[in-house]
Length: 76
Image (tube, rainbow, N blue to C red):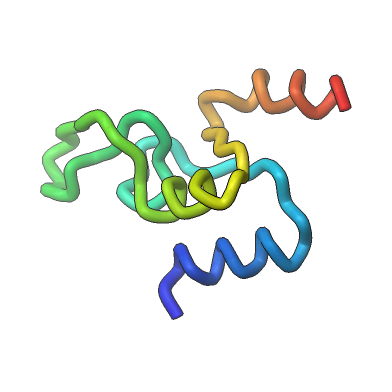
């Protein structure tokens, strides 16, 4: 099972509505990711796991958005 599929399975199992993932990761990044060439080059887009979680309705945040996530959670 791929990491993205495992993350989605766990999100569904636990009823997760939000996920905090690693910024710019080719798997977990959201909005901007490293291009995979190991040169530090960034490209617009989201990683495989971030996209899979978002497709199932999970709100995706990165550590760069931690303050925003805290505010969203405190509004609940």
